[in-house]
Image 1 (cartoon, one colour):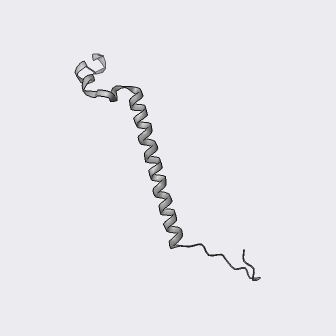
Image 2: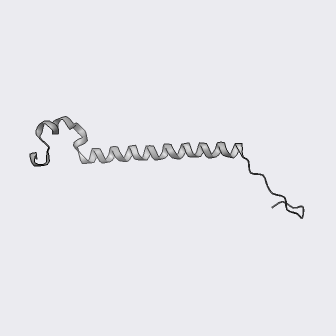
Image 3: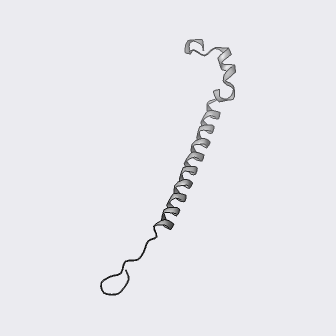
Length: 66
């Protein structure tokens, strides 16, 4: 392992994140949480914009609403 720059000392300092499964699951959970959080913020922004700029129905020249 020394050929790749990893000695026993550095391997012990890395701890649990050295395990590929642990790193993969951590990255997955953090990524999904970030995605859900950003979608939630975008939905709040969209709701706020709908309240600020409400959609008003257009009147047709014939007197009926479309």
